[in-house]
Image (cartoon, one colour):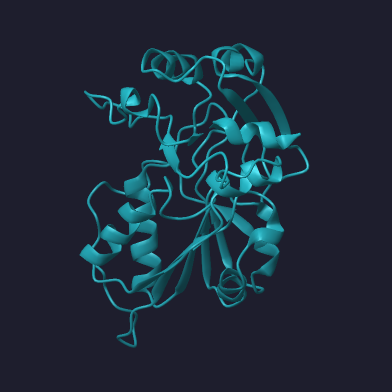
Length: 275
């Protein structure tokens, strides 16, 4: 998930990442550490917000990390697992501030690993579920940097669960789709064909849909999804700030208009089970 939200305060010892422009555009060549060895990058899923949902493997890697590069959606409490002296770099953004480019983040990972460091790239949710972990893995591969992927608990499953909504159920939903509600900036054609989701799958889980919720609802209804289909928007899921609004599909955009990111939209009969 990559919804905009306030960046958590930096824990003691954490350092902000370099400002945009300090990292040149071209990807660097991976130069080994003085002893000739390369480090390694771990692409670690931090889970959807509740620090208790970090995996055991993720915690073990944080405890041994030399460098941690973390997203704005990774709970800052997780950084307390880091050892003294670990370099902690925030690569998210505060509202209104310039966003760190993916190319800059890729370069940071390459440069630190090339110097022999054990680098943890801590990403909200799961690295490979709309987390751009695939792009980072490709960049590391291109530069010859070893890496390991550590899956995390995805907000697409955990957030509905914390709101009392199972995304599948033998009597109500035998299929589920996880969809992005945020298209890549500058894309000429929409990547998501909403007309294909008029009837199936049974449950739709849409991430990053706050700014496009009304358009998504309109497209789904036009494609045949009944306006009376139960729907829910869950904000700040799995955290102490969690809030849930339930309505019919045709009314959910208006009912959740005051809610902000991060939020998950769930559509389908399973929403009825929340009660």
